Length: 472
Image (tube, rainbow, N blue to C red):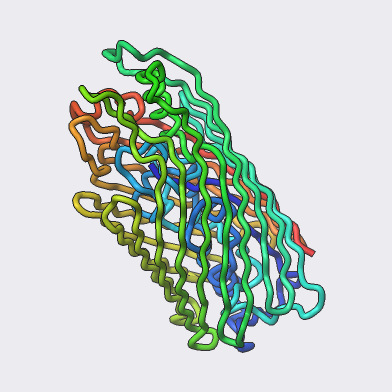
């Protein structure tokens, strides 16, 4: 499965004088139109996405988080989670609350509420950010809680974040705690299995920094670690192998954990209209491996995974009303083929009070994995301090790669979601709530995965998110 790296904190910064015209690096002014101003600010916002950063990711996304990507849904991860290997390993790196491949568009590189652009009315990120304060800087506090739930599964995540910005330096530290509650039900013909209530937790700490080393060049860095299962699918599979083989001497209790580090550069090659970013990341994950048994006895799968990630992106302001982001990624994980992904995101100021954000992407990993996804968010400014958004998304893939006659690889899936968000902005703080139904539908599974039919079954989910931030 993948991470949905889960987790998730979004930074929403509010500029003291809303009517004041916003400047992007180079002191180039944008239209005073509310929608255009919000578009520019949101598009360039520096996202401190604890969710994605708390887990192994090459580098945080500079593009606002799109709706409902929390839940650490593996489906979208399969396409977007360049950090997650997918084969017979129980736990895959880089996932927080993955809805067991039941995905939310993690492909947007960060979890979040569609249209929930971190800092939608706030501080512009490095490269396009307005002149930073040259005093002691700004302090930012963030907190959020998110939950994804179905009839037999409950996933939650709480996140706390603290950061400072002054002169050309920015650093942030975040902590995330995830809980997983699920009812384990083996297949009817699994005579060694029995019903069980499972409860696990995960703790993660992530730090990131930015240092402007030139008027147009910014150094990026991040690192962190986690302890615990990264998603509910890993917990389910770990329980399956425990019930089957724990009585054998060769069985080893799983203790999943991992660490990550990344570095990159961000270059504003066109003042206030063009940015290039490139970064590289390295991840090490101790997972809960699968097991196989034959005449030679019990064999344990690989317990650790090493991943290298390479990322390149371009951001451009095409007109006063349109901003475009193109993102390319390549991931190389132990014993896997390289995974390639592309995503394009477009922010458009459609009117005085309307902003539309759309995205779509494609991922491929030989020999068989292909995935595509798309989504959009429409945000309307009810009042200067209250904004409402409606988001929708769709994801589909061909299923995980199977490499044996008996495999826990998930079959193909399609998932879709539609949600409603409400955001309030004050002088120094912001508050956001989001709710949505979320549906996952798997393709029919074969005999090789029949033992996991209760893991890979269709589910109807609910999503609830709440976040608050304060800066001074």
